[in-house]
Image (tube, rainbow, N blue to C red):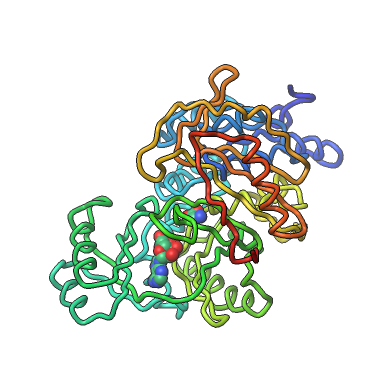
Length: 446
Ligand code: AMP
Ligand code: GLY
C-alpha cells in the first residue's frame, strides 16, 4: 500500500522537503517471534517514518500489522537475500541468539542498517566469563566469582565454600544454565552437568557468590556514541505464585521498578553502564542496540548479575507502551549515530504484563491448540494484547508455544492495571492456559 515512492526509489542525495519524503517511508524488518517482537512491531507500526514491516518469522499478532516471512533466522544468507529483494532498509533483531551468532556484522557487511549489537559486543550476554572479566578489570560491582576449567578444582573450591552458591555455564543456555545450589551435593551435580555438556561443550564453569537483595531490570539504548535510559522493570521468572517453582522465560513484569530513584540511577550509570561501554571501546568495539542490565539491589547499592544484549521479554511489553516518542525515529537515529538529537519522552503510567501460558509450561505442553475467544477480546486505549507462541491458520488462532499471549494494561496504579488484565483474561477464559494471578505483588498491597 505504498502511497508514494518507496525510500529505495528516491536517490540518497536529497535536500529540503524531499528529504522528508525519504525520512517518512522506511521498510523495516524485525527478527524474532515472541511477545517482545510483537511489542516492537506494534511500536514501529505507529511510527510516522515507517511504511511497511516484515517479521521473521513473527506470530499471529504481527501477522495482523506486518507481513510474516517464514524464514529460518539461523540462515543468514537467506535473510540477506530476502532483505535485498524487498528493499528493506533497517533490521531490528529481537532475540539474543542471532546477535551472539553475528547477524548484525553479517548484514552490515552488505550495508544493511541493523539495530542490534555486534558479535564482539554481544559476548556481554554470550559469555558470562567475558562479562565477569570486564567487571573485574573495570571494578564493576558484581558477585565474587571464580572460573574453573577442571572439575576437580571446582569441587575442591566447593568443599571450602558457603552455601547457597551459584554455578553457571559460560555460554547461552536460554536462561537454563544457572544453578542456585543449597548444598555441596547439588553443587557437585551442577558442575558435573555443565562439564558433561548439558548446555553445549563446556571448557569452563563459573562459580559465584550468592547475592541477596531484590532484582531489577535496567535498560538503555545506544547508537555506539551516546546512550539513553530506556526504562526499568521487574519480572517474575518462576512459574508459580509467590515466585516458586521452576524458572521460565518470564511469567509477567511491571514497569517502572519500585526500586529506582535518582541516586540509584546515578550509581548504575557511573559504576556499571559507563565502565562497560568503556571496556568495549578499549576492545575497539562499541555498543549499538538495547542493553539490558540484570541487577541485584541491596541497600540501594546495585550489583550486576548479568547482561542481556536485547530487550527483556516480558519487560519490553511493559516498557514500549509507556513511550511517547516515535519509536521508528529512535531506532533510525540509533542506526545513524544521531541518538543525541532525540529526546525520549515517556508517560508516567503504571504498566503490567501478565503472560498467559499453555498448561504444562515450562515442561511439556500441547501445541496447535485453538484459542477460541480471542477475537472477542475488546481492548481500550490503555490495553495491549501482544502475541508470543501463536500462529494464524485461516481465521483461527492456534497456541504453538509455552508462552502464548501477553496481556498488558496501563493506568495510574498497578492495582488498577492488574485488575483490568484479569478482567480481560476472564473474558478470554481459555481453558488450555494458565497465568500467575500475583504479578506485581511487591507493588500491589492486598
Ligand atoms: P542469569 O541467567 O545470570 O540472569 O541468572 C538467572 C537468575 O538466577 C537471575 O535472574 C537471578 O535470579 C539468579 N542469579 C544469578 N546469579 C545470581 C547470584 N550471583 N546471586 C543470586 N542470584 C543469582
Ligand atoms: N525477562 C528475562 C529476559 O528477558 O531474559
